Length: 396
Image (tube, rainbow, N blue to C red):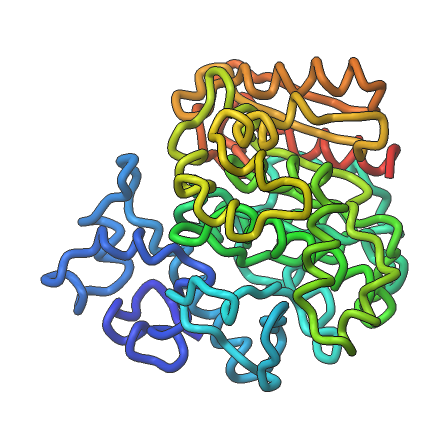
C-alpha cells in the first residue's frame, strides 16, 4: 500500500495507477503539481503545492484513491462495471476515457467485499458527530440494503469523483447501510441526452442485478452534486423517454432483459444542485450539457424534433422546477446561501415545485460553505448527510 511518504513519481509509475487514477481522482487536480515536484513525496507536495481554491494539495486523498485502485488490480475487492460495452473481469478503464466504452459503475465486488467502501481506510468521511439516523442492525444487514447511485459534479465537464464520489460512498455504506455505486457518466464533449442515458442504464442495471448485490430493488436512490445533482433531478422525470431510447439502442438479447425493468429511482438526493436553466442558473453547465443542441438533435426522440431546434425550449425541458409532477420521487436537497457558483435560489425553486406537486421532500439552505463542499463537515451544512439519511430512512 502507498503512503504519503511515497513520491508522486513512484505512485504514478505503478500499474494501473498512472493509467487509471483519473477514474477516482480528477486528472485536472494533478495539474497542480509542477514537474519539478514530481519526485517529491506526497507529504512534501502537500507542503509545497495547493489546490485551485487555496488548500494544500490533497495528498492523502490522492494516496487513498491510488490504494483503492490497487485493490481493484490486486484483489478485485472493488470493480468497475461496464454499462454499455462488454469488458473482461477485472477491467480498469483508462482514467481519461470519456466515451461509451468508459461508462461504468464503481462499487465493491460482491464476490470479495460487497460493501468495500464501508471498509476503506480513509478517515475524512467519518462525521465529527455521532451518526444514528440509521439503526446499527440496518447498517450491518447483508441483504435487502437500499442502493445509492452517486453522480459526482463537475459542470458536465469533469467528474469530482473523490469528494463527491468516494467520500459519499463511504458515508452511505458505513453509516447508512446502503450499497453504493459511483457512476462515471459521459461529460463534454459528449452532451444531452448521453449523461441521462448513462444514469438511466445505471438505475436499470442496479435494479436488474439487485439480488446479486443484496439490494432491495424498490429502494434505489440517486445522489448527485452540482451538475451531477441536475443529472439526478432531471433523469427522475425524463426516465421514461430515456428508457425508450435506451431499449432502441440495446442488442435484442439485452433489450429483452431490460424491457420490464423500471428506470425511475425511488428517491433523489441533491447537493447544491443545478436546477434551473431559465434564471439564476449555471450557464457553463447548460452549454456543456447541450453543446449547442447538436447531440439533442442527433438523439431526438419521436415527436421531439421541433423541440430540439430551439435553445429556449430545451432550456425549459431541462429546467427541473418546470417539469416536476405528482409522480416525482421523494427528494432531499441542500445548498449554501453564499454559494458563488450555483445560486441557492436553485434549491428554493426546487422546494417550491416539490411543495406544489405534493411530493415528500426536505430542502435545506445553510448560511455558509460556498460550493463543492462534499460532506462539508467544516461548514454550517455539516449535518446535511445525517439529515438526508434520516429523511430517506423514513420515506423510502
